[in-house]
Image 1 (cartoon, each protein chain N blue to C red):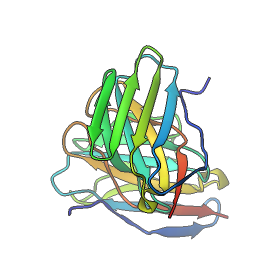
Image 2 (image 1 turned 45 degrees about the vertical axis):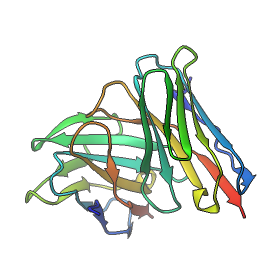
Image 3 (image 1 turned 135 degrees about the vertical axis):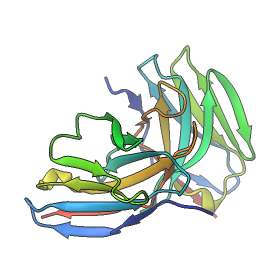
Length: 112
Length: 112
């Protein structure tokens, strides 16, 4: 069983749509959850960082963690063509200086 | 905005050759990492480095790999004898405090 599973997509939506991106994981030791955005041929860029179950909102982005189901989500409201990228979930067992385990990434395409 | 810089952006090498990938982390950061991403695969942890020594490494990081911070600014990844399966995008990342890893744009390694 893979540690972190993420649908690779692509997910195609029209501009303005609400986007839902998801990851499941198997290791209950993961405590910290992140979403990274990666544009083509660029390095990952941190979007959201959460700890424990619940929601966290930052502008158009909302991260949701359900540790009982081992399921995390990223919602993007009012999606823009500039949001077109690959979204990677990542998680770690400890805060701070801990290695990250990544999902494979979901490619999102937002059409104007 | 401070950033992690990596050189070269792309290197092509013959199997069995030594390769050195270079990174300049953000200047006040203390923790350094190498990750790699084989085309179409997930980002994978290779090694973390703190206080001039390796703090953690994955099973990918075998005796063919080494890291060094020779002069207090550069952080290098050396692959002693490259194999075809070493072809990947290699990302350097640095971290000052808990939470955010800042990734460079990556060095693409192609082994022929």
